[in-house]
Image (cartoon, rainbow, N blue to C red; front, side):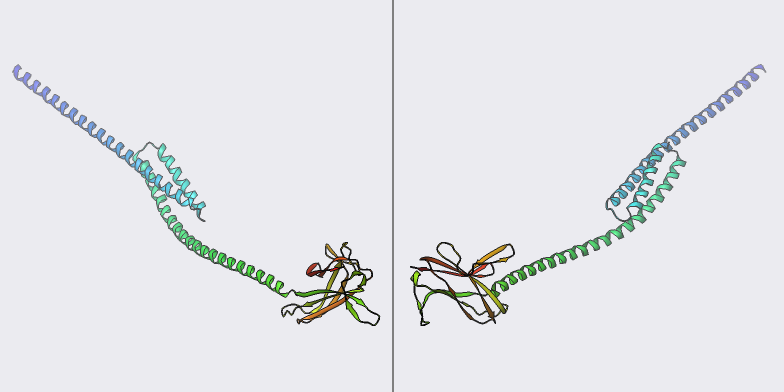
Length: 294
């Protein structure tokens, strides 16, 4: 009887221990499973956090590139980039739980959607700017060519004006000087003897010129003896900052045809030596010659 009670008690104890063992094993299995799940979750969250940080960095780089193009949208792009930088800072500080990561994902998706929309606008603006730049370059080339052409025309016109001015100047030709003695009978005898000379005769020809300006012309004749004395009137005329002392003037009515000019310069006691004759159109010598009296 007592043996049966002992066996029954032993069985009960063994069953209780077995149940406890099974319960312990189940609890240990659950703990192990929970630990593995937690470790898996932590690894997954860390991986997703790193992936999201990478995507945010790429998002920021996209904005940096767009901002560098300096479009009219730069202010808006900078504002959106600052949002990305702010989210990166928050994500960096976060402890990486699933709920927080889900919130950051939503914010990232919103920022990514906004970025794509802005990049489309930037692309449109960039293409428009390229067209404008191309047109501006073409306009610049045309303007440069026009400027070069105008400069060429101006140069040609200046050369033409100089040619016309040069061609319109009157040519004084055949400047000659004769020295004469006047007899009582009125007859004039040419002589090279200084003591016998009563007057000098200066003559020259103004050549025909169809492009010259017609009208009255004044020429200044200067006769200088061997001692550098100006003979005749010895009058002085000024042209700007220049002056001229002349022996006499001769006025000519020029009508674009050849004109012969002749005028006498009377004098007394002409000295022997070489004389110089200059014909001036204002301050410019247009002809010159010399002669000698014995």
